[in-house]
Image (cartoon, rainbow, N blue to C red; front, side):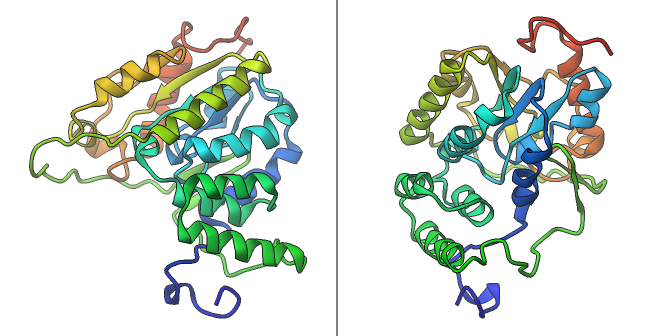
Length: 290
């Protein structure tokens, strides 16, 4: 099925080369010198931290975000690439949605675009989803037949452009907020994600790399639909330096987002400049000259 059937025919296999440009990002690591800043996290990371803007402020940055990256996937990426990248500090994007997810989407994306090793199997057991097991089996099959990196029909959004350094720029679009229905609901935070998160931070600390945790901006209408954002922020603050940028940047839902989750390029510029202009946020000993 994975070799010959069109993607719409199978729902329990999600082998997608190119989705979220994870493969390009991982290949880009080999061309990257140790950056000042490494960004980790979900699509809010690779769509909302632009290395070109960081460069304007004198910082080199590499973005290791990936689609729906939960702490389970972050752990694999850290173990594989943190010692190679050797950043001066880390921005760890923490979105409540990834702490509420089972991790299947993020696992399938990572398995499809990186080499299959024992750590992938351990991650699959942590997620425990049939889609992940099937995707891992198919990825392993392609690995042993030496076709894991063979060209496949790309599943890429024509509105996306990969920028060296791990960022994905979205074609300029605008979001039309919908009217909220019903009462705000809670994020259903999962203990297994917090356990993996704590392990990730312990590994980062073992290498003596300073980090900050950051809740990147989402549309106000989306943020207000969740009634336990404060609870999440309190939990995050217990793990280290934490910044919730929601409400801290003058963003308009209709002007600065392209969907109900992500900033458009105008919003990215406002957010990144606010972050980089706040000298108290980045844990670098000395800010490079512009």
